[in-house]
Length: 238
Ligand code: IPE
Ligand code: IPE
Ligand code: MG
Image (cartoon, rainbow, N blue to C red; front, side, top):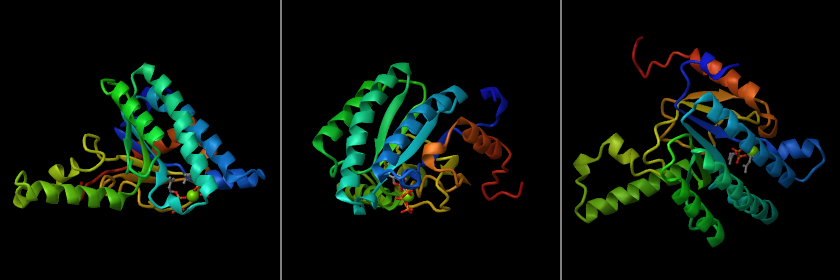
């Protein structure tokens, strides 16, 4: 399908990239092999997302709950983030802005530095904004924003009566990124798993049984076509 054939497109599309472990298990491989393959899917899909003309794409790579996994799986995932960041930084030569959301203090210094460098180098890019959620939790996001609001208020910079939805939204990790229009979850589960809770208040949701490693352009176009046919009422009676 040609990009111009799907309208309207979501401005912001978010992905819960689930099913890597099951993809590997089906092949008799360790879970970590699924994560390696999943990173390839992500990089391939970025080309399609750019080609289709979507402005913001956000990917759930590691949740605040994923620390419960084995040490081996967690350390492989962290290594993969480091390795793939290098590829993504090179990819940025093409007008892509890279952003990260989630708590960084629990990540290695090396990874934190790579993340800061990638953001710094791509700050001025005007094309697709790619946001990777690493050690991200929707509740954590809201609690941190609430703490910041309380501190600003305590220090005399913010009157509690001036707190608005827009203003509070700017205290979240996603500060300048618009709300999610379409959220896609692969891997067969129909849940949000603590992803962008505030930011999906009026997002359209799209679930597929396809495992993340098997997800590609054809299915993305299917999700976009479905999205284009939805009637977003925002509580109105239209
Ligand atoms: C998603 O795939 C990737 C991460 C959570 C990091 P999973 O690892 O959750 O794969 P399944 O759901 O166990 O198949
Ligand atoms: C959600 O997947 C987190 C990411 C994709 C990073 P999980 O596999 O952790 O979600 P649950 O545990 O099935 O809800
Ligand atoms: Mg999973």
